Image (spheres, rainbow, N blue to C red):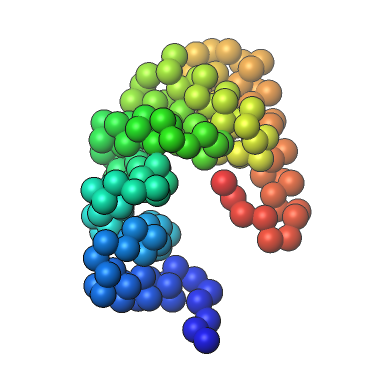
Length: 169
């Protein structure tokens, strides 16, 4: 039995599978996610593009992670295209939160606000979405709304730190 406790441990296993079975969607997705956590965004984008090109069930997840990586390296327009496509198949706080963040960074504040609000509505545990919603309100000089959003982000963060084993979203 192989023990895998980190993306660094898992990556060689995914790479072995994709070499042996180049059409193995799940292995390409796993490889892309590992590379994301290892902060190797360009390699992650390449791996995740294989999933998108294969066009199977995990395309939405691959588009989300590819958008994440493209956003991380400042490729805002391709990141926006990917996250908008991902939103056609995925409906969760992470997708809406990332879409809101990308829209915020693109200075599309009227687009960002409902996306971030939806992310927080779907999960009040999405600290990042609440934080960026606070930034957005503050940018637009909506001080009370900004303060409330920052307070929600702080509460979410404190709760996540007090619960053993909880992962940041």
